[in-house]
Image (cartoon, rainbow, N blue to C red; front, top):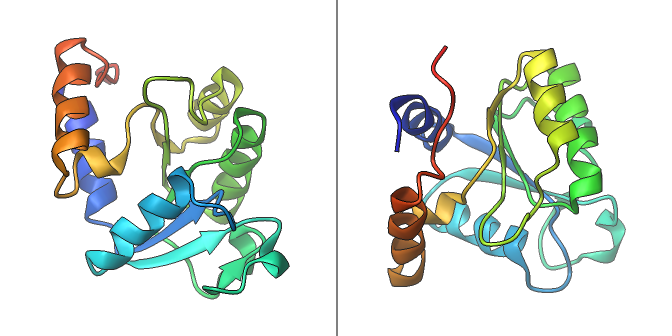
Length: 157
């Protein structure tokens, strides 16, 4: 894992208020990440355009609806929606975004990555915070595997 990647992960995990975009009524990646952050004391916000359909927790339809600012955004949407999340984060001055991406493409889109660079948003384009925030055995093994493959890389500036 290179230093720029680890620095962004550290910055993300040192954030206090994190929005998780892509929360759903059905169990899924976003819900698991939301729960992990909540369990570890973060102020976390579930975001989904289908906000009115979820009653178990408070949800917001978009980032701009969250009262106060957030420090970072976790993207767990379909890839086609990722660029829109990046655009909204940039418009709101949210400096750091992590796009969930693992064994498959996850939420990643090249368009979203390009937009983040154009708009000055710091982007973690691979991995999952569950690999770094007190990982369980499964996520710990995935972290080791992806690290051995050189997946945790960000170009040096």
